[in-house]
Length: 306
Image 1 (cartoon, rainbow, N blue to C red):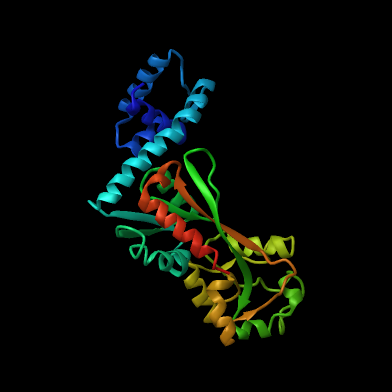
Image 2: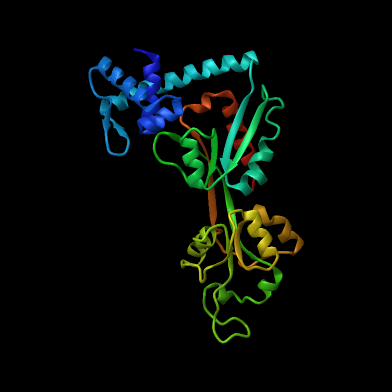
């Protein structure tokens, strides 16, 4: 059985689509289709069921993928290991994820990856939402993604990286004028006849962090729309410090302003809301030494994050 055909078959199985597999393999879609048909002729039975959106494996396709994929990954590891041992080239790591997390945690953890870990690796970082990052990773534009969404399907493999505690914060001027009952969406604002919407600062119009906090702590929706929306939590923090309103932020990101008194915690819930980050790669690619080193280093660094 031709190994090139098996490699294409495994790529289609993981991608769930001839088109996505073609992009990952650097082939045309007709070439991928032709190779799969050639393999189906060799085994004498269909390996995929063609559907309006992509393909699904037949029982024989599932069996063949289960048997072939680990061996193909092992061959890739041997081949890439030989390249790494020869020192003939360094590989660039293409990383994607949320801007503040990459800037504050991931990139500093990877900054010394060429020291004591084999041949040097360059790093290229791209900021994106969870959906953008996972789509780009699936399309082959990135090597690793850090995401708050766990991907589905067999194309991508996710490992839990870390949990971050979410805290409700505001500048002292806001904290002094907000009684706790106002956070529940009841009670008047001091000096006003009736309650006004709380001014929230978040990274999206849907208020993802505020909504997560409110549903976890109050079992309710946030009592107000966004006052300031900016797609970088470092900018959210800056707006809150300037007095723009309230925000829900990762504790690590606002630890210094809290210690210095420039920011206040508004609540201390018994169960703190958490958000989980996942480290995601295309299935099989962790056999590549430069990806494996980066993956391992991020996991080791995450063990120290709190």
